[in-house]
Image (cartoon, rainbow, N blue to C red; front, side, top):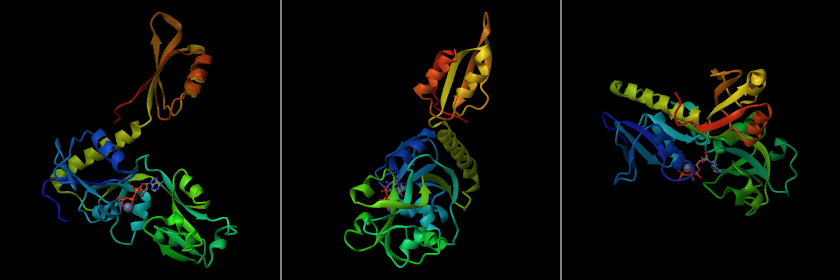
Length: 293
Ligand code: ATP
Ligand code: ZN
C-alpha cells in the first residue's frame, strides 16, 4: 500500500477491543474524523491526515514500513511482531487496553514452576513472546500456535497448558484454568514509524504527538481547589494525590487561611475529601481537566 502525498496516516484497529478508545484519542487530540464511504480509510476534516482502519496484527508492519506515520496497538501485538527488521518506536503507553499474557494450566497438571512445562505442549496466539520467555527460563516445550479459542485447547487435549491474554481472569476461570505465570504485561501504545514523514508534514506530526501526550496526561487528572487553615497547610497538601507543587494564594480579609489549587494526577476519592475536611479544609472543589500541555 503506498502513501498519499501530502497526508499523514494513523493506523488504528478497525473493530475490536482497542477500536473505540483509539478513535477517542484521535478525536480528543482535536482531529475531526469523517466516516468516509470507504471503510478502510477515514479522513480527518481539519488536517491533512487519514486514519487507516485495519486488523491490529497489521499495525506494527504498516508503521515499521512507513505506510503509516503513527499507530495505536497493543504492546503485546508489537512485541510479537518483533523480527529483527526495522521497528516502530513506542512513543507512550496510552493507559487503556490493559491485559497480561499469562501461562495457565488445568488442575490436572501438577504445576510447580516453569520447569513443569518441560516437554509439554502449550497453545498460544503469541508463539514468539512465549518462545522468548521459555528460553529465558531455560525450558524447552512444544508451542502450538492457535489464532483464537486458545482457552479450550487443554479440554480438547490439544495442549497441556496455554499462554493467553487475560484481563479479568473470568475466561480462564470459566474454562477451569489456573493462571500460573506472567509472561508479558501489556497496554495500548502509540507507535511512530522509523521513516520520517515528508518534511512539510513533520511539524504537524510533532504537534499531533504532543497533543496526544497531553490527552493521556490529563486522563484521570483532576483540578482541586480548596481553602485551608494556614496551620494545616502541610498536612493538607500531603493528602492531595499525585499533586506536584500546589499553588497557595492568600484569601482576602483572612490571615488564618489560604486558597490551595492543585493538579492531581491520580484519582481523587471521597475518602480523600473526607480526610481533607477533617484537617480543616473547606469549599473543596474537584474539577475534571479537559486538556493539558
Ligand atoms: P483484530 O480483528 O483487529 O485482529 P483481535 O481479535 O486480534 O482483533 P481484540 O480481541 O480486539 O483483537 O484485542 C485487541 C487488543 O486488546 C489485544 O491485542 C490486547 O492488546 C488488548 N486486550 C485487552 N484486554 C484483552 C483481553 N482480555 N483479551 C484479549 N485482548 C485484550
Ligand atoms: Zn488481531
